[in-house]
Amino acid sequence: MSQEFLYLINKDDLTSQNLFEIIYPNTTTNYYISDDFSKDFYTKLCTFGFISTSINIQDKIYLLPEIQFEYAVLDFCDIHISKKVKKLLNKNEFKFYINNDFLAVLKKIKEYHNDSWLEENYEKLLLNLKDEKSEDFELFCAELYNINNNLIAGEIGYKIKKTYTSLTGFSSKDKAYKDWGKLQMVLLNTHLQNENFEFWNLGHPYMQYKFDLGAKLYSREEFLNKWLKAIL
Image (cartoon, rainbow, N blue to C red; front, side):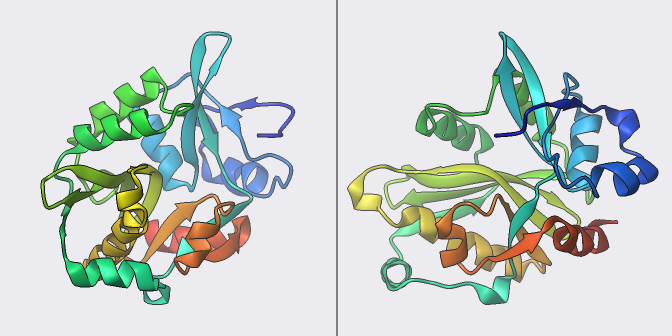
């Protein structure tokens, strides 16, 4: 994060006029900050295209909403499956679930990321949201187990209408499961496509694996045009 200043944002700022005339056109600012960890504020941010993490500043935890400059977006038909993942699919020595054990995935993510942005207040927010299910917002987790029921890879994201946005995930560091993170994503892609989702928002475009998977780069303007048509 290279932005020099973090601008405060609250629920009252999320008006159509403010979003379309000030926030969206601002090509120098992507990060904002707030001490509001309410469910209503968070889901509104998600609806308007922000992807929020959290940050600890001087021992106080803040929500860190970002309206990104660029996004990685995957249309399901563009999925690229590597030879190694195809071999894993053919062996079929795994179990894949959706929304089976959110708490187990959350625990693994925290263990996997030493410098996780999943600060305490953000984790509480997710736990408060995990049982709320509606067309407008639903937390979502994907889980990949081996045949011995060990959780090997997974991720947490959210569904809004027929879009899915990834937040964070993990995959085992054991060399025996080297490509299982990619396998989990391929299986999730198939699930989303079968459930008639419109597209997959993979967030930041700075990781090569997203483009190896078939994602395309969208500018903020391009993304918002696609996003707002799908969710409003």
